[in-house]
Image 1 (cartoon, rainbow, N blue to C red):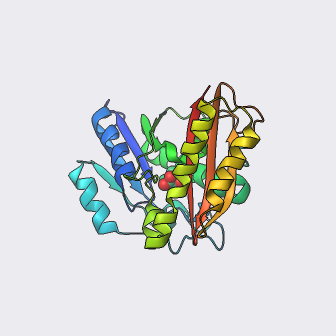
Image 2: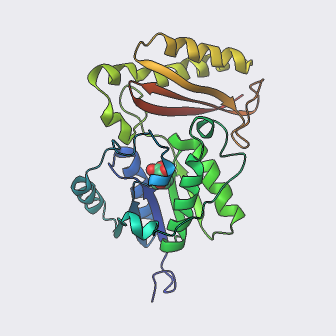
Image 3: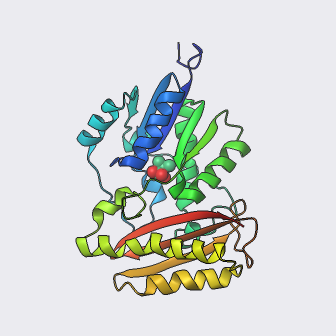
Length: 267
Ligand code: PAF
């Protein structure tokens, strides 16, 4: 009999591995809120575009197994590529609109890949709760919409971004940074901090906020802006005035590594 059928609650943490404290915070929540804690580890090829960092994406399965064991995860699901995508596989789930903005604009097809694999994981694991980090804010919006639109019986739970001491959002990709790049990468959080301060002091022009962020990033020689966005956290559409809730988000290449970060502000 399956765990679900026997009345046990299942919590799923979907990941691409190379665990850091952000992943571990999701696992701790899944562990404490469910009878069975499942972590999936699959570097999903269809969410990477040709020329992106699929081959360079950091991997260390032995270390990840140790960390999952330490946290008393019940099942670490590490499928083979062909298990998820057999040769004939040709289906994609498209969450329209929400997938095309912010990261979706510079990574067309990325969120189709994410939505497709997460839907498959929901079918395979049948979780009652699924856990995602807010560093990938847009991903959480897309997945919540997909789960609702496709009637998945799962509660999407989001947890705050976990940061390094100097503010850099934890990401598996941080391990790809050289020492100089690591130091330059502080500009993401610093620029968001400046934006938050300006909004607190009364700035309401979204364009001024975008400019303030761009100016801070431009001071870093190793950094190149992909996008700077001030949007509605529900529709992810760009706004011109910051009022009520707004999502300030950015993606920046530091060297060859693309990093993202965001902050939710309320006026
Ligand atoms: O956030 C991630 O690590 C991935 O996008 C996810 C949700 C595991 C899907 O591959």
